[in-house]
Image: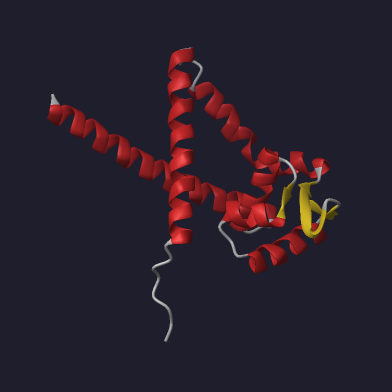
Length: 160
């Protein structure tokens, strides 16, 4: 039985890596279709999910430097995807928001995939779906913790 469990875990890990890889390939294709970079798309997705956020929050969630985020937000603002306003409570901060009229345009490349995903889970019981939600929530927490660790423990060699 332990060998069966180990094999099942190995299969799950392999399937997870393949799903993650294909997800990234798909994201690159969607970004290209929209004339965006993957970082642009990640920023817009974050704003669509979280709502208005500070430039610092965007930097943290996209794992970009504040300088890179400033350039990206300027580009997205000029393209009409986001608004950027000074925070009335702290004029040093900028609040960035997705323009609602552009949200449908960003959803369009995912419509076919979303319909297929809905059909995929049609036969799942509510308990099965709840298990998957818990799994994805735990994976999200793991990814965020690992990103924090990478940021806090930068061990990359520095140029001399």
